[in-house]
Image 1 (cartoon, rainbow, N blue to C red):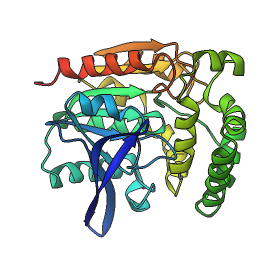
Image 2 (cartoon, rainbow, N blue to C red; image 1 turned 120 degrees about the vertical axis):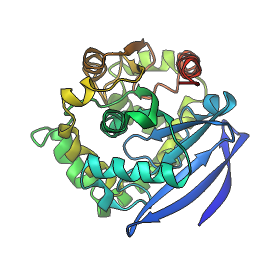
Image 3 (cartoon, rainbow, N blue to C red; image 1 turned 135 degrees about the horizontal axis):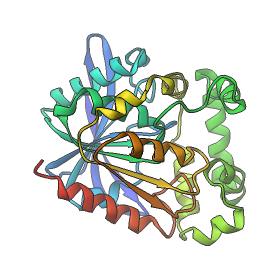
Length: 303
């Protein structure tokens, strides 16, 4: 089963996105295929997201890439059962690539999707041309002793997360500036005035749109339970060229995650950004982010 929808970014119709459902062994993966290029990128999206993600897609599509985005384990309509471990989840992402008749991919892991990307790259090197980590978690993140972990266990439980995101989206639609100001500290270490000086004109609306598509399902709690399963050994065996992109102002995923990955992965380059925070696809620095990524990927197209 699949459907096509037009994807609008910044109010402009830019591409078609195919939404599909793949079921194997009684478990289902929801996925999207965005763009009609010949060069496949597998995106392992961040927390509270799904196969409808949009951040950073436009420059990749215009650059000739095709983006495959599965809703990760427990997100969207993807079965939570494939998230019993990173090993099991990655096994099913490989099954999806086989089903789509895609061999090697450029792998892009974002934020809380970092552990999945690192595990995939370390265990399926024959399927990965390059690895890009964007604002990515690379080792143990929030732990049961942390207040944020405890809060997440309440507000992002499957029943409560529906209410949480409905409230956030309603306030964001009605009072976008107010909601952004409340959320800003969760994205950036900068003061609100410093954040505003680095924002682009459309950033506020992009945040509003994000808040309307965010859902946690079972996925975010699965993410929190699995960050401890990524070890230095996983990173040390990654052999593909790796680009690590991280804002020095990120408060959601501290900069040490990027530095740690750069230290452990042998063929890596660290791209430190001065963007206003975690959402590196927004702000005045976003064009640099897009250009850097496309240039990196093109270099290894024939790998």
